[in-house]
Image 1 (tube, one colour):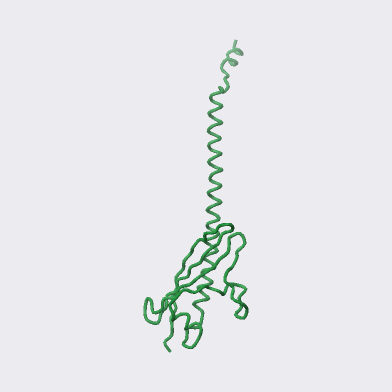
Image 2 (cartoon, helix red, strand yellow):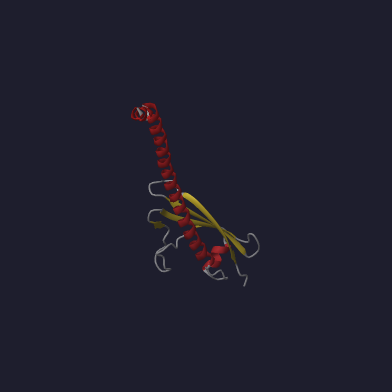
Length: 156
């Protein structure tokens, strides 16, 4: 008699329970797949931001290291207001033709303009606003990125 009781107490899953379990599993898998898409987009954004920051710092360092004494080309650049295209991307070496863009594999193509505001925020100091644009592969709208710097202009 005891054997019969053991067989009667064993029960399996009903079809409804099985369908509910599969539905919950499918929802969880879809959420995990959508999280992967968000992670890829965030990683791509972080990669572009990191590259733009690095390139922007290099451009700003290049501009700030120019000789700004009276009688030099740098003096004219930093004492005349206006917006100019940055044209010293690698492989520029001072003797070859200006290079107006820089391509980073897997990120996009970078171009830069800088705006000089002389005597701002104080006399003999020029503000430099560097606007970097990232032309993403296949995207006609550039992503902007802006940095600021200040250049001391010696009076003598």
